[in-house]
Amino acid sequence: SGPEGIARVFAYIVRRLVLMLVTLIGISIIIFVLLRVVPGNIVDILFDAAGFVDPTDKANLEKELGLNLPIYVQYLHWIGGLLHGDLGYSYVSEKPALQEILPRIPITARLAALALLFSASIGIPLGVISAVHQGSRLDYTLRVVSLSGLSLPSFWLGLLILMASVSLFGTMPIYNPDPKTWTEAFAIYAVPAMAVGFRSAALTMRITRSSMLEILRQDYIRTARAKGASETSVNYRHALKNAILPVITVIGIEAAFLIGGLIVTETVFNIPGVARFLVEALRWRDYPIVQNLVMLIAVVVVVANFTVDMLYAVIDPRIRYTD
Image (cartoon, rainbow, N blue to C red; front, top):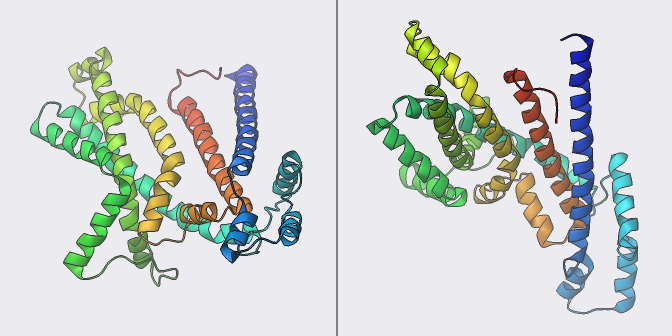
């Protein structure tokens, strides 16, 4: 507390922000270099598809796209453009990369947010219930469900959902870019969100259960029960509050890596989001699109980890603002 405490908090935040910046710079270099060392580029693909190679035309196209420049010069051009909001142009569509990426971000963001909401709202309560009823039939049932969630690939689960929908209702959930009502919009995203969020919910549940079991054995929990506190107060006010830290870590990691799970899910459900667009850009060696999308994912991962660090210090006062 006081000026000294504020100074510690400020120094802690500054250190984390500097670490974020260094991490993003390192990731940007890795992304850029790896894309260039992979055999073949957009020029090779275009000329192979045409069935002939004119060395002069090929050299002119490489010069036009800037692929003839040294790799460090290409990198500096890209970073300089990023700092000015210029992400370059798509090699395939010849449109600004920002114009291609921006419309897809809200689609993936809605899907990821709904999947994360499903994961937390289902995984945490079921984890608490499983821990409170340890050794019961309900506990064993929930553990089997969680194991199935960790075992089933999201793309296979998505295909099962599509086949079940056709079998039961004669139709399947189809993406509509212009839903008329919010209920229709929710229905469009709910099914794929549950498919990709099932695994995350299962992991959240198991971490919650494990953490709760450890906390429920502590002396202060027995003291709370001895003083006449209700089971609800003991389980949720005392135990869950102290067991939530590892759960927050898992939710933060899952929030960052949901993009990876969405790649397959968006493909299965034909959703034109960022993840599906990344796969298409990789196939065409569309460097500006790929490196900007991967950089966007890296920013999401780093920001998610930073948010988790901040939440740690807010939720648990025992944590100090030190490295």
